[in-house]
Image (cartoon, one colour):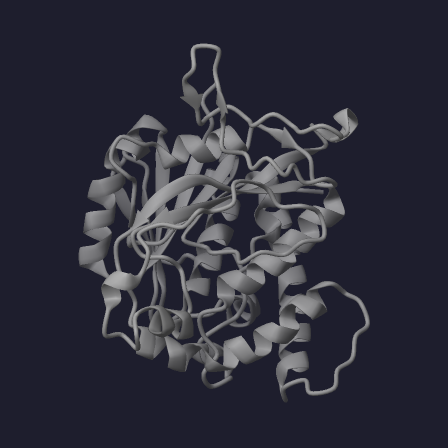
Length: 346
């Protein structure tokens, strides 16, 4: 039986979305994907394109939630607005979706490849999370001498057999080529303060495999698919002007990844990274990024420590961070409960 997939894409660029729909049309048709577009702004709107009925605008995407939830859980003028799309998927007839894909509006599928199927292949696997195979999962040589990139790399000597199918993969974290996901400081360093943009690598040797239990990683939201049961834990952190915190931007997905990984570790689920690849078509302004990332970079040095839920020395902690983080944890818990309720969980 074919899996049902909803794809949530936040956007403020109509021209970019037209290009996006054109680039992904053949794969969305192949996999019967319902596209949920969250158009950000003062009054965010949602459009649904399920191909059979064409594109329809949802005039009131928050009518099934109390007003205070809108004010407290969803944040405008930031990529975290995709949380509204996730809640919409859970709270409508699209709730029967087996998988939720989220993409940025400036990513395209590479010619001849199928990033959606690559995600689906991952989410059918069981993988280890207590041990890490030092042979990265890049495929293997077949008997015919052909390199099969879809096959799982063999486990090396000493890897326990009893945990090789330890955990179901519930999150597939994809990667990207053409425009790497660097912060502004790194972009400027690699490009000689922006003078040599060609020095940015087209691709990187991304790790491919399950992220071990207890380990964090830079979670990017531009190419991710989750099983519906993991959706309650996919809450992008509050960012932008609605937070009332000046200069807080560009860490919604990174901090979402911290809480998502913590939840998966606790439940016994796996997050698999590196299998699905898209083309990132737009380069952001590194000088603007440096400004937007100042506060987030400072706070990020503490965020992962708080995500561990362990005691540590708070000496030197930036003013305002702990209050923000505790508020984020509270919002993430309420978002989880909201999604479960909308999905009909007991």
